[in-house]
Length: 249
Image 1 (cartoon, rainbow, N blue to C red):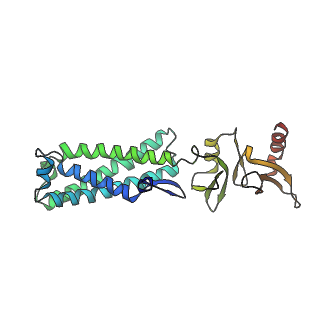
Image 2: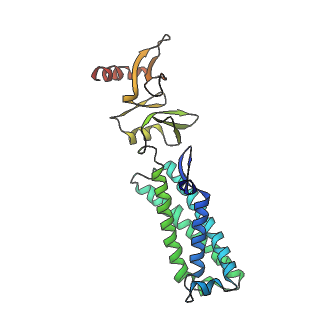
Image 3: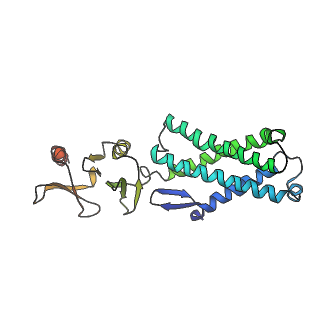
């Protein structure tokens, strides 16, 4: 059942297309019957209900996909498990205000095609508030999905390596995820007590380092406990730090 709502990718959990379409169908139905005095069964029997439902679902899909894409992009720049006023501001602009304006424009076109002016209808009084409320709920749902996909709190990270402009986060269960934030930002989130940032584009978990040594070419290397036997080159500037670390442990 979980697979119907979440899928695991190289960058974490995402709400599936099935779940997003289900949200669009529910939102479309609620908007189609909102602001009317008849019962749901009576409204669903009206000749104009199927077209209104189809249009509302289509608009809802556009809005949901916009929010989904925007939140994923925002999450790469501003982690959703951090309190960041700049992130909140961008989220309100791109994930609430922008889709609300888009929905209003599409609704205006729909009413115009049927010979009505949207300002002369009940849309602004009834549907407008419903749309705004649904967008806020949608942001909350997608935000929770981003928190659930947080690679820094769910599992133990063994090391992170920067390759081809992206970070590969490796876990102790041999799984991995991709992250586009800078190594410096990730190192700050992880904390200096358990992890060390290596200038040679890696972050290492300290208790995952088995031994440090010089190889035959004179490069300072560390061997990791997990994955077993993996060797990573370390900056000579950190030699004293590693020697001190092993003496204390």
